[in-house]
Length: 388
Image 1 (cartoon, rainbow, N blue to C red):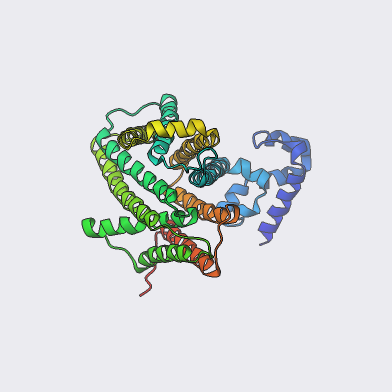
Image 2: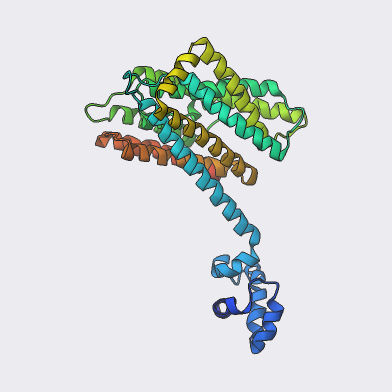
């Protein structure tokens, strides 16, 4: 304890004189010559890292100005993490807000809503393809990638996104849709149980049940004047099913790339996945006759065109930050960021978009968010608590 206190006093003294003596650890010897009898202080300073290893000091006991020099990698990692978190939060919270605005928009010229869901997927995927291509040019393309799996994964992924948009277009509120999408583990677990013989803990089952029940309570807990579309519920269920299918194909994609002896870079995933999403969305939009009337609607209503372009840009920016985070940190870090982002999106939508909830509805929000956070905790700790 005496050694710890003495070292802290020494560090505190040098911190107060830091600006006049030295700007880095490299000129410490010169600083030692200039301060004369205070060489002992500098000796303790240089050995601070060693004292942390021995347990005399904790990292938290070291001043920030010194920690920057003793642990530069940790500081850089913290900056990178902060960059990824802020980027993902800003891009996707605004993305969700714009998505809600698009499907609540009513044209002032003909009083019709925007309903060209597959055209929206075409525009979003196109912007992501452009961003992914730029990323490939900068980082380089990986050769011998099994494109067939990318094609199937891209088609199922764009279908999941389109079904979510169709749910919103058919009256399902954004908070309910977002909470429901947070329960995507349900179809993934069902598929793994039926096809893969996987096993899950009681806590994992309870988390999914909490999310599903909480979402249902939110849908039923609206104040008078609110309603939940049956067709919207069907579409969000279809989106969850496609999420499960996508997860399965993405696992196969990892196996196929491993067999081929290649390791795709982040922008390989972004470019090829979105390219096949673009092709699939274009085919469906053309088959449904959405291209011409949809473009006409956008030209007639430039206000919503601006929102859609911002929406697509946020998607591309958000995906870039996701790949940046994946390339620097464990996937669990990304899972934590995206999970908490959904909760903030739901709460901001309720507070800023005029959604009215009863006390029952708020209890559903609490239950669903509790399930989401508990699921996140299981992923982070890797411990599935046995509640038998």
